[in-house]
Length: 336
Image (cartoon, rainbow, N blue to C red; front, side, top):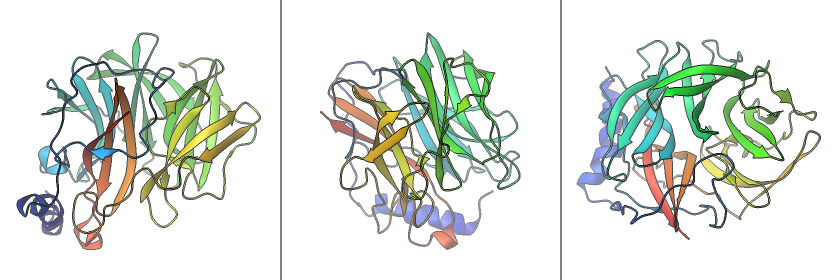
């Protein structure tokens, strides 16, 4: 059961703003179109969502909607087909392991969501359920956490045997002495690339085959150092005609305070270069009181005809040392 302090934080930041009529935005379902799935085909002609606008009465998902033992939900990843799917980290501190991957489904284009329950729980703390498709299969590369802080955990790639609720391990692409988190994948020049953050640095790995163990580390690993505002990935990358947009968490002052976008301009076995896109962050805390008043650290964007549909997460600010974590999920859009 959650504590009284935690419940007080839920009331102040999740329920009170709605009761007093603070600004919110009603969800506008898309009129048509289809998402562009897959790692290589996620964007082509529409500008990336660098300044998403609210599109829902946020948050659309909080811990209290999933059960009394859930403390927060975070790291949302969408998968949009005929039915819409949302995968999230479900954090339940009284259980072992404390975090597993949950799934929600919407049959009405995001107006309502139905919780399917936990769909991946291999006995280790999992977060960041990066879901994608490739060559007719659905895959997930979740973020593994060791039970011992500071100790590295191997990354396992899962393939769906019955999407979205049944998954089997098919490869161990990354094993590292460094504790790495929030790995994302890119396709470039016939190679798979993995980017993950650890120890204040960005690491890269590559392989010609997706379902392969022990991807080769980049010759210059870590490929980025001395940039605490942008080395830990913050959601699904977006492919562009010339490269890729990668989102990074800003951890310069505190964990996951805001999100910056960087374009990867060079990526080979011997070279990695990126540069910041825009003059400001993609997402940031709203301040004051509310579900995203203190931090925003994740963006997952899917393309529908003339708009991006974006799942994000946010945490509270005011009173957090007393109230604890209250990560929740929001929904945004950006029209072309």
